[in-house]
Length: 99
Image 1 (cartoon, rainbow, N blue to C red):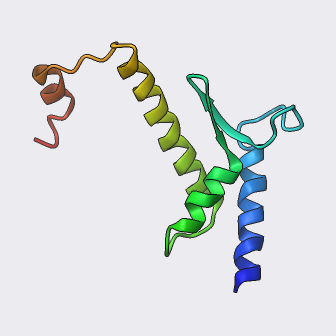
Image 2: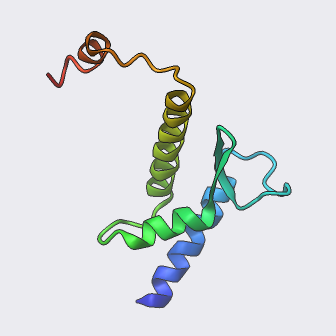
């Protein structure tokens, strides 16, 4: 079972390395995503995937993690720069379907 998990993990890491990278053999082939001066490594994505019980080790799951990381990183950068409109009217309008 452990051998099979490690094989899947290796497959996911290789697939992530190739996702959206035309320069796969660049100086940073282990970087899955970059945003706002931050980097998400393939190793970190693998740690996240293996720490969650019951998750399928598939490229789609790894891409989802990378996309969420990218969104949160860009949002955090805008918050740090004070470039987020966070008044109650804006939030109510943005979340009107949930309210």
